[in-house]
Length: 507
Image 1 (cartoon, rainbow, N blue to C red):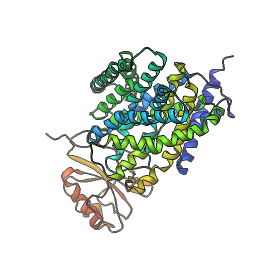
Image 2: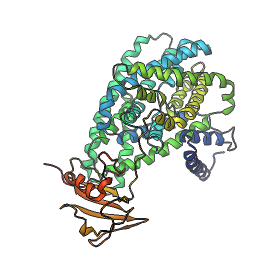
Image 3: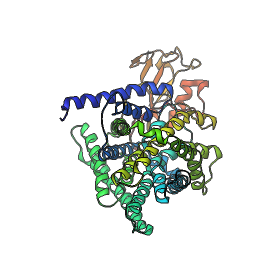
Image 4: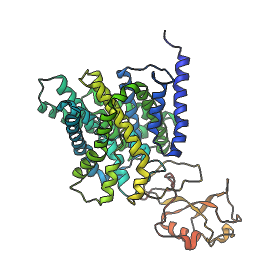
């Protein structure tokens, strides 16, 4: 008997809401969100209190592919080329050579310690070889894990770009296992085709999407969100059907869009961030439902062994070997080595052998799932602590007190920024008219406690007020000195504001 759609909607939404509430608690405890989502799915599964029976690998894989596509798209449009460019070569080495080295080291361990055949061991290594975009984006963009310098963009770009190599290696290993007559050299043209078509299509689709967004002039702002959502899925599907790597194509297209000037950019970034969270929850819940906890117990010891080798040997060796051509200090390399979060991507890839009926497919899936859980526990809970130990933790950015957003524009001559009035400010108890602000400078809003007021010339400035100031870019430092006095420190971190987009373009 097919359950009523009402029951399906209630069940699905209840699981998502429970996951969100559990994530709120987990954030305070320092537990990664992906672990919470998976555990909720397992509890709702056939062997948990929920009793939901779900064992269809095709549906699980399909959910994972759609979710990963939208997560990669969200990560790409929120990443700027100016941040990625300095670390591009390093990230590329990690996402190619690093993935291969990791796969080889895990395959050796699987052969020697678990008795796998060389191809089965390599298949296991290929599946767990890439870091997970959803897990890395969520962890590094949380308030608990703000990293200094190039480490954050390097890790984010690596996680967004290493899935294509892992997918290629996984598909290649499955082909060699299921088609004994095929030569390993036959995979070389497939690799070139996957990467070339994926890269070219991603760049081309990205440029077309930018032109389309700016040229359409849609009547309703919400339609732009629908347009980009459908575009992301279309880019993946068309690239995959034409023989390219769809994930690579989507990520490159998103990078192109995120690095371009488009209308309603900030609202689109926020929309896709919300979609990425929904997809992350959905994907981890589905994969949690798909796992049978009773099957994890027999592979407890092998799972721990493979997980520890991956975390403490394979990942660090792959990072250090891949980054040999570039100078990085020891602490940065150690941090990159430690942030090897595995998440939904390996679990989704582990469904490929199940659908292909590869020998040892069930054991491989359970080993991969166990490895992801171990990575979430060890990596996800310790990243802020390790960053502090290695002196790579940056100050938590101060959030804006004003809920305003405007679209981004480039080459601004005017800037809108916030300043909080310290107790030593020389303008305390002065009226705005007597402050002596330079010409062309306006105080747009003042936050006093929980209230926001639109000031006049007679408004008195008090300690603890936050001023929203509009001025020309060349007078910003002068305004800071007037407002802050002795508290105006060169290099003082700015408030974490959206790009307000005020001002005209320079000629």
